[in-house]
Image 1 (cartoon, one colour):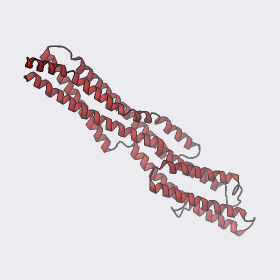
Image 2: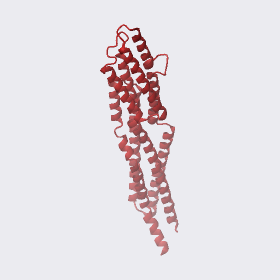
Image 3: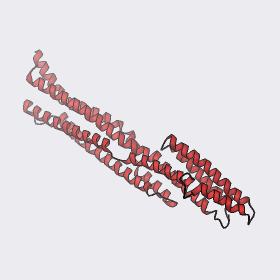
Image 4: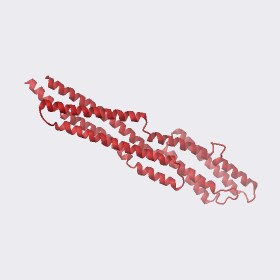
Length: 308
């Protein structure tokens, strides 16, 4: 094999190796970011907001049972708010943000809410002026929100929410593993572009042709593709960080719906990008083939000359 053929083969191998490695690293980094974004949008954020909804409903239920008169206690309004809390906790359980420990906490809270409702209903059945009424309400308040204990309903929900928020923060974080992955992707992309430019210069000097169209197209498309992926990832990271900020504020009342709408709006495209992440592999393979197409005909040409 002539020196030119060996030089071309060495450059082809370099392009194939760098192109394959760059494709795989970009695919893994892009998929990881959007997998976390989808988890935040479809599970973690709804789970946190479901706990917020349950807490707000329970606060409203408690506010309807003042000690100086039961008013709505035991009536439709009280039970409606308790029902809302149960539905919200069922949603939080279905999202399963914190795994087994979270499900156990929710089961315990659900049981405690039944105890709380039972004490309120028992107080409602007492006649006016009964000393037991105040005692039952005191027991109910201790089950719902005892400032001296974290084992009450609100204390357990606060702890669960903190664990859920920690999961959401991890999903939105751009930690060192992700930074190293994207740094590796940047280095590989730069090395690949450098190899493509060097291969074009070699081909231009050796074959006296101003442009190698496949190599030029591969260089341009790799550059555009890498920049596009970086912009998409940075945008997604910004959206996840903003979504977590909405959750961190601990919205109540109408603010819960506002936060839910904000998260949904910011992460509306996360599922689409995650579904299209396989396209990074397809595009990378196509560009590797395009890179090879710039050198393979020249290698074949020299081999043909040697056989003659």
